[in-house]
Every structure is written in C-alpha cells, then in structure tokens.
Image (cartoon, rainbow, N blue to C red; front, side):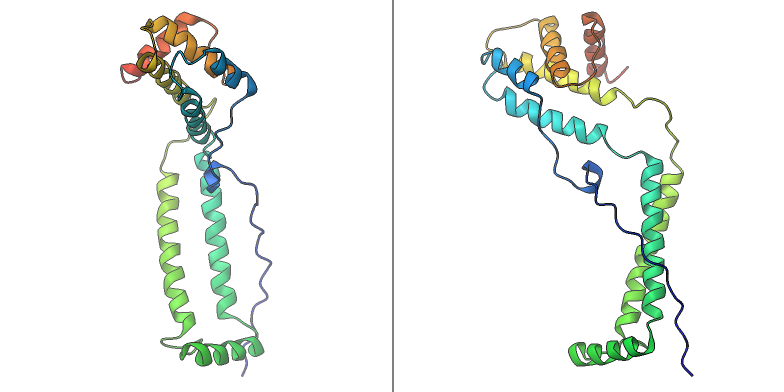
Length: 214
C-alpha cells in the first residue's frame, strides 16, 4: 500500500536584503565632507589618515548595525522551521519521485535513497545535528538580557578615543589632547556620526574610554 505524502506548504523566501549581519562586505565609504576635512589637514597626521579613518568607520558601522537579539532569534527560528520542513519533504516524496531518487542514488552513488546506509539516513543525521546545535543557540540567545531604548554609544565613544589617539601618535608636530579631541569630534561629525557639540563632553568621553569606560 502506498502511503500518500503530506502536502507541504511553500518554504518561505529568503530575505535578499544584505547587511553586516548577513556577511556583506564592510562599508568603508565616508562622506564628501569627511574626506574634504581630512584633505584640508594637509598631512598633519600622516598620509595614512584617510584609509585608516575609512577602515575605522567601516568597523564602527558594522558593529553599530548589528542585529538586535530578538531579530537574531527570529532568524534562528525561521531556519529551524525550514529545516524541519525539508526533513518532512525529504521523507515524503511522491511515489514516482521517490522511485527516481532510488534509481539515481544507486546508479551514481552505489547506495539507496531510503533505508540503512542510504542518502536520506545520512541527511537525517546531519540535519538532526544542525537542528540540535541551533536549538542550543536559541536557548543561549533567549537567556541574554533584553536591551531596550536607544542603542549604546560605547562604540561611538571608542571611535572618538581611537581617532584622538591616532592623531596624537601620527602628528607631525606635538599636539595637545584637547586639539586631538577636537579633530576627532570634527571628523566624526563630518562623517555623519552623532557626537556632542560640547568640547568638554567630548574630552570626558575620551578619558572615560581610556580608563576602561569608567
């Protein structure tokens, strides 16, 4: 007696939008204002400031745009559902399709599709292992605290401190920490990053980063 396969619903289409969280190359582009500002410095901080700053902005952008935990949980859940549906479909092929799979597996791989040692059994084992690890990942993400409200500014403050430190280390002539902080603030503002207008506040943020964020 032939067992009629269950009719499976269509698998969801994968979201084709790209971003840092989906493996897209880091975006190191900077605004024309930021590039113009660096050029106006006329090599005061070495010739590598522009490519270095581009790299720092790319890293900042990637970190700042990471998905929230609840969004990652949603994606893990979607993958689990897809895997479960793939297992269901693989085990319930229509009779003619299942027979063709047997022929192709035996002809090309010298093994059956179903049964002990078959391709389906290997697929089941690998998929089961993947599902197990994804479920463990899901539990780990669920145990993390939920962060609400505005995104943390720690990555921005670290970028401020890094740019200020770079200008001090690469200045052709000795500069003060205040001057370095001003250059860092101006560069980040020109790049479209929200930074305090108050110079004292910028200097305080940089000092805090140097002392470990305290």
